[in-house]
Length: 187
Image 1: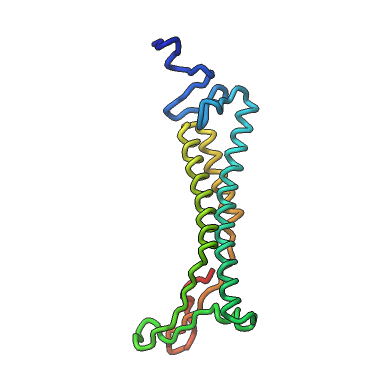
Image 2: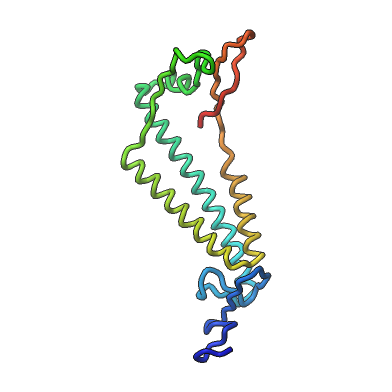
C-alpha cells in the first residue's frame, strides 16, 4: 500500500520497523529511525554498545550505594566526634531480648541527608531511571540479539558491581547458651 509516495514497510531512511520478535541484523532500526543499522559491523557495534550501556547503568547503581555509605560514614564520623574506636563498634546492633521484652525499647538515631546530598542522590537516581527507560525503548525493537545483549549486560554488570561487603548485625536473644544470632545486615 502506497501513501504519499511512502511504502508501509519501510520509511524514507531505509529503516524497517518491526513490531514483533525478529533476528534482523542489517536494515534494522533501534530507538529511532536515525539509528539505522546498514552493515553487520554497525550491528556488532550496536550490540556491544547496548551491552556497555547496561553495564554503565549497573555501575551507576553501585555509585548510588557507595554515595549513601559515604554519607552515612560522614554522619557517623561527626556524631562519634572523629574517634575511630567509637565508630566501628557502634555499627553493631546489640539488643537485650528484642523479641519478648517490650519494656526495653532501644533508642534509634535516624540519619536524614542534607538538602544538597538529597539533590545529588535524586540526580543519580534520575540518570539511572532515564538509562533504564532508554534500555526499555531499545528492547522494544524486539530484536533478539539486542535483547540478549541487554540481559547479558545486566548479568555481567550485576556480577561485577553488586559484590558488596556486608557486616552482620548481632542480636542477643537471651538463649540458654547465650550464643548470639545473626539478625540482619548493616550496609
